[in-house]
Length: 184
Image 1 (cartoon, rainbow, N blue to C red):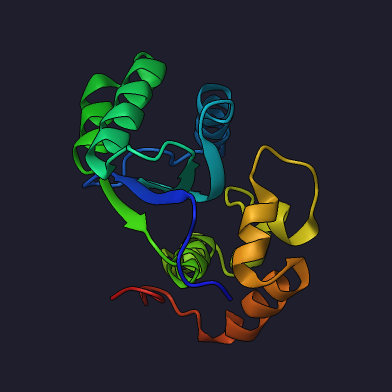
Image 2: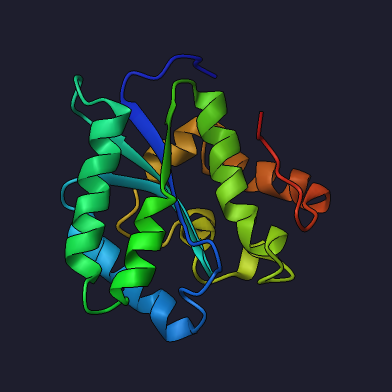
């Protein structure tokens, strides 16, 4: 496993205080479709999870000079533009206001943050098994089905597609609700 990444990867989390957003499946589908339409041609989406009130994503950038606060500002601005009218202005501002960003510097950080995203539905008590949750990148990555994700990058972080699956299987029993894995 390599330790230093050659590209820049960021973990971004948007969250609302009262978990009012994305309560309905249709809202989650709409948000993810809009995310794909707005960002996948410009920003590599590596891994994501969307649960009521929270969206976490790992993105990759080719730009060498982008700073984390610039990335967050750009993405937050696009989210505001794209979702105004779809999400109430109050909820949208709350969603963006509580956004946070973290640059991932090593493959190990990327592995644990991706796993953290994939297990989020189970930890938030939205699903009893994160491996079957439809609003996460896990299914597309595990099955290898075509998607807008940067699958090869994620598989490389884990040492290949089969190791991606083995890693998730090995740690499945450790995933408990409200327990954060890979957090420092």
